[in-house]
Amino acid sequence: MKACRVCSDEFPATHQYFHKHKAGRGGLRTICIPCKKIENKRDRQIETIRASRRKARQKFDRLHPEQRRAGRAVSRAILFGRLIPAHESSCAYCEAPAEHYHHWSYHEMYKLDVVPVCVVCHSAIHAGELEDRPKQLPMF
Image (cartoon, rainbow, N blue to C red; front, side, top):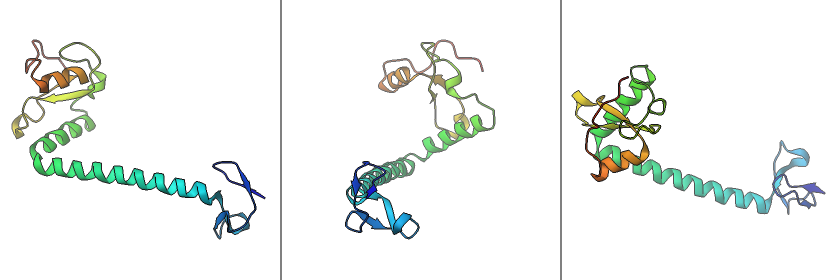
């Protein structure tokens, strides 16, 4: 008898319950065939989700290259220490912990003209519910 490492059920150590695996003990895998099918299905679903996100990102990059360049410029500025990470500062509007940077413009000249904002305020800015610039800009 051999126990499956996923479901812990015990089955006869035969090819009817476990796939072949040369390096495995007794030449069999440690996961039973039904569990392996479930694992494979989950892996395919995860890969499908990753592929769709990758495709959406590529489409966004193709349609909005200036936004992508500005986002990459901010990422590089954080990486090289010219800008502090947004999560280390507070929102310019409500003083909550910031999670994003908001760009005023995606133009090459202003790509690092950003302000830290929380998720709620960032959504409100894009919905037109908050004024475009806060009354007092944060000092870095």
